[in-house]
Image 1 (cartoon, chains in turn cyan, yellow):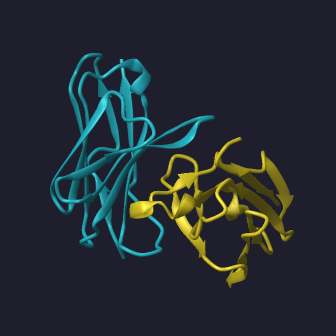
Image 2 (cartoon, rainbow over the protein chains, first blue to last red; image 1 turned 180 degrees about the vertical axis):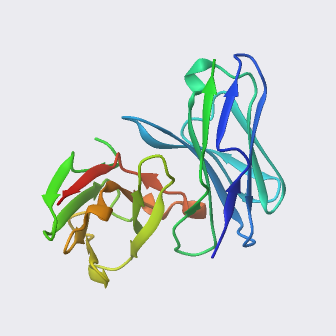
Length: 112
Length: 113
């Protein structure tokens, strides 16, 4: 089974801090995604990557950046954390073709 | 209009009944459709995928797709309390590149004994 690992399950950060959320997958998937999930708003795509060093903006990229230096690792960066970035962050990967995602276990980030 | 819309819940059914979850999508050329189950505090888990018109069955789950009506549904037969979760419909709208999925808001299902 594909494993998608997010480094932290819970994280508390202060406003203005630079925050790194890490995601690693073990199946050599090209495509990786970062979503945030908020009550009433559902899952919203922040960024995705289709290859090493390649990235595309999703629907809500403002305040975020990403890094993909190696195929297995896709990092989400909050340049200067704000309270409105308090959310559940979900990483996902998928192989080429018509397949669904495998999600990581999620990181619940609280910005105080 | 939302791009992927699910019937508003919450949905409550008795144990043993059939639960019916519905989803409509905005783009006629979409090709890939998925249902995810998400337990409270957990991440979504893929339970069904469907690509062609008609029904696809997997155990107690049946996915139904009607591309002409832009409609996909999930039936859960013999519902169990362990099926209580949020169900998310996801669509690769317009066959967009890299398999990017757009999710519905989710329908909360409660199966009561």
